Image (cartoon, rainbow, N blue to C red; front, top):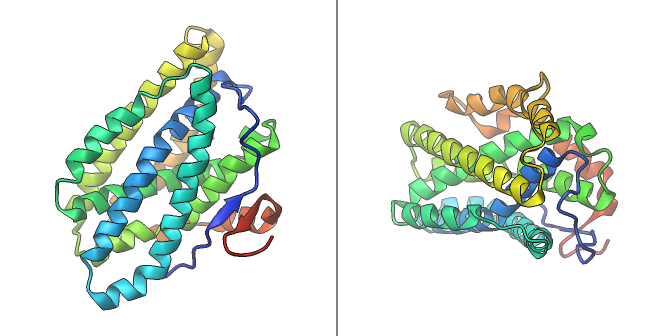
Length: 273
């Protein structure tokens, strides 16, 4: 069982965030798209684990309760911070098409057995942990970004890596089988990637960079260069399909290092800073 700390991020989100907050138009649009998905997605994760916990025997609930409480606290904080970030985008004319589509799919999943919702949560958590590991492994991507936004993304990435086990363990405790676990990952991967691409393109269109050659040159470099996001993350994503996979097998040293060396960026909830 992991000890998950709920942290208040100490950054200013009253000051407006520009739509093009990164020097590369594609990177800004891509990460803005991710942010647009987070409030809805994280509420689904919270609801899924709460429902899953109710289905477990009392002794298992007691064993997992501290970790799940920390998971819920972290995800609720991510949801709030990205809502504030997204409001700045919306105020500048950006339209979130991803969230309404996601809400329709979530409504369908929630009508199924609770194990399906927890399986989808576990798969998405592995997906986000994979993105988080890549981001923490490539600090140069955010080197020229203003510090408050750099801290936002790296704090979020660190906590995604930190709580990567929780949903998977709830799914296992519910008696979830490997076949549905892998089916959920295929489902999540297809819709997450397609929605991410659609929202990124829409963001670029609104921002005025969709038809610029420099935008797609940057996209190729960001996604498909030897150290690009998709090429260098594929192996970690694929490990989820191994029969003996557990998220704890993935290295979280970069997450622990960032949290240890950036304690001035956050305050643990319930503690003085």
